[in-house]
Length: 184
Image (cartoon, rainbow, N blue to C red):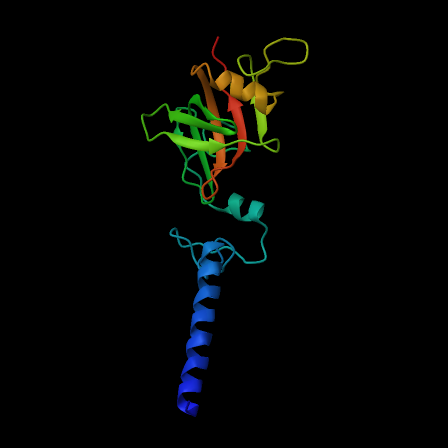
């Protein structure tokens, strides 16, 4: 073998390795235009790479929150909010599989599957679960405040009649919060 052939193989090997590393980085979301970069968002503002995700989320525009609940982005009427990494949908919840549920938006949008885990903040009013004394537990915004379990959530989802507000991560579809909308 000649020296030229060995060099070509060396370069080709490095190129393949670089391609694999780049593909892995893209698969993990580590891009120059990711949420942690200094690149400008579509609205012309920029997020600092030293800001925490919660600081970045609070600086991004929401879909017009009219609910008065500072922890959510969304509208009381239903639908989804366009808020960067988070997605908030109000609609009827349905059971799909253990740990997997669907929300059918009130505004007639596309059904959205989401995942729940023990870390999901689940709040009920009456249908999912109630206050410890058995009473209805609702906040000023009309959504549940009683802490519920995943099992209680899945049981309520099987009825296909509970309206919820789900805040989830757009990429993973993991639910951060599921809140029951109270209706007597």
